[in-house]
Amino acid sequence: MFTVSMKPNITQVSITPNPNANTTDTVNCTFTVADVNSGETLTANVTFYNNSAFFQSFLTTVTNGTQAGQALAAGTPARGETWLCGVTPSDGMQDGDQKNSSTISIVNSVPSLPVLA
Image 1 (cartoon, helix red, strand yellow):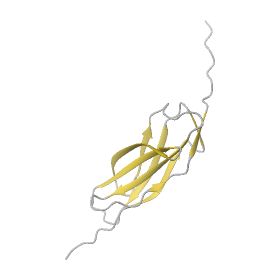
Image 2: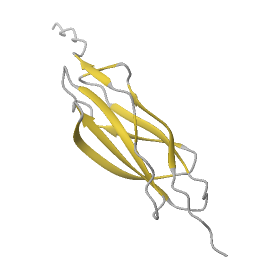
Image 3: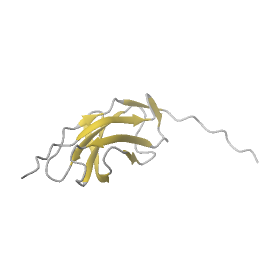
Image 4: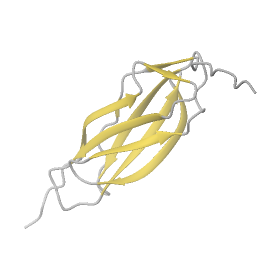
């Protein structure tokens, strides 16, 4: 008897803060990987795109059916840019289809008041 391995899938993916992030915000990609073959070790390739161009990827181990996330360093995005993240799940035997978040726009950060001595 053999078991057929079904490819894992992404049940949800989102990018925050949404719809707009400040230049000083940490941009987060959150997602959930699901796999009917529950005993398999799962990973997710999380890719950030800046104005639709590849920027950076991270490979992370995830738990089946549990929300996971990956952060992009604060201060990385600049004003006027549009960002999204894409997540591709893998069970070590098959890669699932990449699912993309919606986009966010980067706006100026709120200025801080000077400290008067």
